Image (cartoon, rainbow, N blue to C red):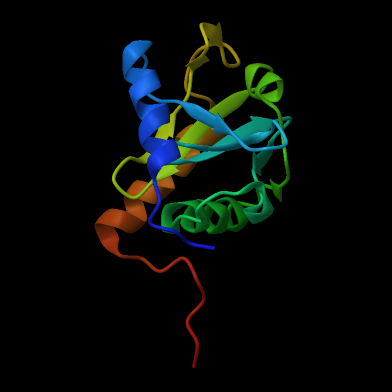
Length: 145
């Protein structure tokens, strides 16, 4: 259900500001990662891109869908599955997606480096390809006749 009630997101954003961090990662009622305050969350582990499924209580963003399509086009496996914040800590890479933010690498969460603390190769590739379609308008979906 798409709702206009963003109170949880606003409260999480206020907590992030108070903690002097750029973003908050919100968990759902099951204790698994849902989303950021205005972004979708992705992790990369062993070359596989993982993002919470719609059943995790996320708002399915347009940029999220584009990134999934871009990854698939690059033959990068994408899984929509639940994961915990500890899996974020132990990910090789992590990033957020949003309409305004586009693709934002996560290199540290709760003071813990993600991977080696740098932007990872899969995240870099997705950013590069996203910028290409944004600037050229190249469709990522096959043309329908």
